[in-house]
Length: 335
Image 1 (cartoon, rainbow, N blue to C red):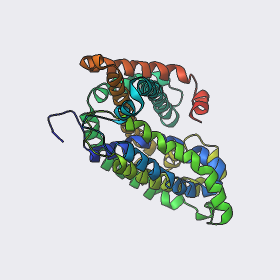
Image 2: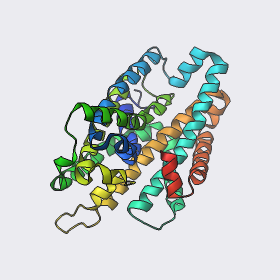
Image 3: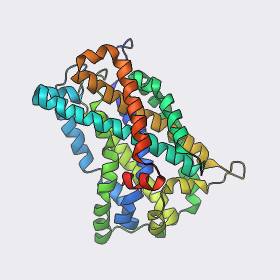
């Protein structure tokens, strides 16, 4: 791509998709899936990989002939006409802004639950919203941040999984049988819905390298599915399916037990801090997509793109403050 433009390549898009989707994945895996699949939940993550590439292929076909500077929103406008396409894109935009607010609220709750019990979440939401200002104004910022964050997050996962190995009990994992496959099939839709959040980012509109989007999305889907399976194996092997189903953030409960030669007693604080990066990238990508679709539907707003982006951020902050006043309502909304 032309380095002078505020754009990202398809490789950067794939990395951005994967890293930003870690936020909902950690929040939801094993989550509700373990309540349906039990100890076979790790198979649910693998089964979820079957339909996801089909979604990627469909997306690739929709965007196969997209012109430079056109995202999925532009394709919808071209296919369904100005009126029908605009209605669909505006409906998507409203949902994206609301979901961005939910991400703000969930990220704040994770900090309160895992690190600072008893704190008020609104302060964390305001700080994260302030951090996201440059992200929602420049797509290239997101692409480069994702490239930097990927190896750091990989080290965090490697660290967490290696130091959890002594506490794993293989007896907590279901052997592969016809019954376990049936249980896994019941849990797969929960993990599938979590990973399909990436499809919201198919609307990242302009300033993305031309060409079909199947490959970037399928690479991100495959990596997420394998990571989800690893998360499910580690968490369920540590606590068992029954106890895991009763936990709100089982992954963070697991790493809370890590002690490194008595040198570092609060490992989870470092890991949760890393998740600020994934929330930052997911929020930035969602707001970039919403801003781009608004300027696509109303071209006159293009000259005020920065103001539109900040307005979307303010609306997301407002929806995050109103959508879930308590942690209990947040869990219900998440489900």
